[in-house]
Image (cartoon, rainbow, N blue to C red; front, side, top):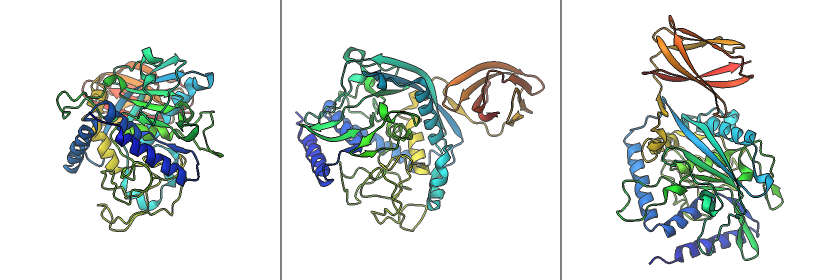
Length: 444
């Protein structure tokens, strides 16, 4: 029978780490603690998860996914707002904004791409994942979602109606995100830190040992503290006397875990310095011996690493990466290696997300045009190669479906009225029996 000795090591390491930081409460992702909790709850989880990561690594090495991604993937998202106090019941506008941030970050459409140091331009990646907000579920609760370091318990009550939370919606085919208040980490009366979120890595896989008790599919998804969901969130998050900048990047980070990514420093130690022995399994990311401290320290170069595949020069720590603990206004990129890893995960262990006609191959040989662009009252869809019926889905930048129309291309043309659309950027998804393409439309 497994004991709690490992979790006690985490507790003691965490307490030592906090003490070494002058008793300052820490803001952190709960990834390491959550995986240990899962290994406690489901014996064999850690071994099976490592096997899954090794399989994905081999697929990436075999170049099964190209670095230039020409496929658009759509992931449908269900957001559960589980709230106790009214401030936790986030407005729809905040949820839409967070979906917009995910769509920007995973498609390299974020405005702060200009802040990336030029030395890392050769490895910038675009995942091509479009997040579609399928449903918002709101649940009032009296439950407190506590992290219990002594028992190794991570809060999962928010995922069950019967425990004061909200049951997941078909986690095989939908990304479920629970937004709630995660209580601070306490050691007696001492507040050690605050977890901003945690994510379930790929689970229920074919490589699981028989009768190993795979993780419960009802718990699959991402949990985010309500204070760091959406960059237009009015709630303030503090660390000691410091106010933390929130740009919606915590969900970007946690969804990265959901797609199998590790922290940029490789999690070589549970907390603190890993002596450059940890590796995230991604070849093009420079090693680091520690996470950033919610700052943007461009002078940080903690490991000598000249075997990156794309350069022989020792690179500084990649603090701009979404999988670090850098300031949210510093994060702005995934690498090509990380993109390959996520797409391999999405088309492999998490391929159920794509089964309901949500994967769309971009046929680059088909010539589609939309004009005028920018447009005001009307736009023309044109193709010299396609005739007949076509479905047109119009999404706003947050991923919300605005219109779902059926049109007929006569002589290669179809007109769309834009009367119901306000000013802004939209995505047009053009679909017929053989072709699918997503194009940008600016309405002014």
